[in-house]
Length: 324
Image (tube, one colour):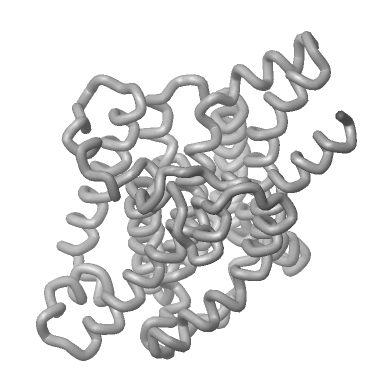
């Protein structure tokens, strides 16, 4: 991990690997159910994970925002340099995943990070997973430019105090705004507490963009909180650590249960709260599980998460051709 902090968070990288596997599970169970016909356990899995895709994508955005704010590349690079570094990292896999299964002009636009997820076009891609990369790419560029300008231009001092310097007022308002965004997202997709129909009239504020903004900023707030409190962490004694580890097991078990059985749309609203607890536990390493997963081996697995996420649909298409 790059940045001003030497401490590696291999456990957070490992979370990305786990989520990549879960997103493959989310997409492959309906395919397997159709391919193998009426198999009870496959039908059960394919009907019990109807909302898990969105909650995992939200998790990806939160982790991306966390790492973006943690590395603080906007303080060390120019925008042009950042774009070059970003394209070099993500474009080869994106391009390969589109070329191997090319079938529409939308794939050409996706090569330039223009997808239906951004609201710029309405045609889907041969690789549906590419929408996430496109939204995240533009979101990171816009946020990078905004934060880089805030370091040199007094016009952005208010935003700088809210996000970069991380004042208490910024933390409070930031949490309120992002949690409101998650609530609106949940209501837009089926709940009845609030109405977000007004947002449906805005072509560029797609569900993907809304997930991206709220998740990314929320992850950024967690990063700023950690950076601000990094030097004042208190040591946890062995007895309390054991209790926290038991709590870790309970929370992680419940978390996995949500990922496998997320059938209620309202669950997306409070899912982020549970995920926040896990992230905070992992970065502060309160329990033994968080410490155990913070090993270089698990961190290396996290490096494969992007490739797994992007290549799942080309692999599905290939298997479909082979199996007829």
